[in-house]
Amino acid sequence: MSLIELKDVSKLYGFGDATTLALDEVSLTIEPGECVAVMGPSGCGKSTLMSIIGLLDSPTHGVYNLNGRSAAKLRQAQAAKVRRDTIGFIFQSFNLLPKMTALENVALPLAYKGLTPNRRLKAASNMLDRVGLQSREYFLPGQLSGGQAQCVAIARALVNNPKVIIADEPTGNLDSQNARLVMELLSDIHKTGNTVIFVTHNPELTRFATRVVYMRDGAIVYDEQTELGKVARRARKVMYTIPASSEEDDAAGVSALMHAVPQKDQQKSKVKKPSRRKVAKKRPKVRGGRA
Image 1 (cartoon, rainbow, N blue to C red):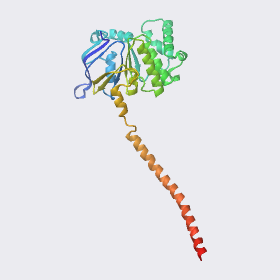
Image 2 (image 1 turned 45 degrees about the vertical axis):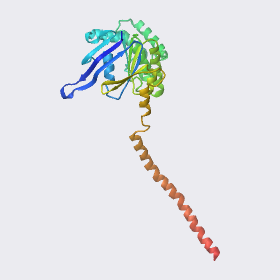
Image 3 (image 1 turned 180 degrees about the vertical axis):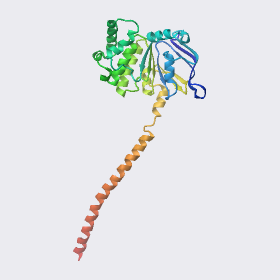
Image 4 (image 1 turned 90 degrees about the vertical axis):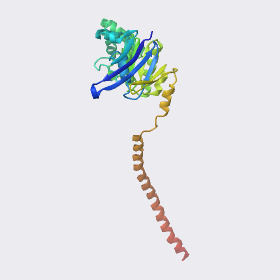
């Protein structure tokens, strides 16, 4: 039985002439233990797809089954319970509570399960140890680096032992070093048996996926199986066709050149003038010698 199954799922926002088609008859099946990267340009429906899979939104048309259960038949309280126990969310902006320590942030989801404070904090501490941040458990989010804050967010997503991890641009606010740290952590989580679905614009991050789904205009246009450690074939094409510089970079370069050229001309003119004077002084002496 498939863990995630979408059949002809569409999502519309707005009414009348202002209607926007965010998803257009998307069909997708994800098996337990897969690591799926979702790629596509901004506005293609990636985040909407993640919201529907994560039970944060419901489709306008189509069928969505999560672990064999129809999402449409779940009441609001049931959907909240399934979301709490089955799905872990990781967001681009971390979404950590600024006045709570890393330990308290990670322990927060356990409060909704009715665990005692001691059990919550112990479980949160163990999870922070798993992501390598037990020494930072009493730090506030503002005292952590971007990579550390995202690792805390990952620990919070894992503390309920969910079957599915949904990461929407988890490295979007990180530099390359921290991005690799976060993706290696997600890769380790995937290797323990969790199903991981992450959204990315970076072709390099497809190295961590076993499958890459490409979206455009609200629809899935390609679905590619890939090998761990290698950039997906279609993603590689995208990566190597990205221009090295943009029009803004070119304009900035031209502007810098226009400022640099007059300075060079001035330097050249300053060098030439003394040489002409020297020649002018030498010529009378030569003529005088002949006389």
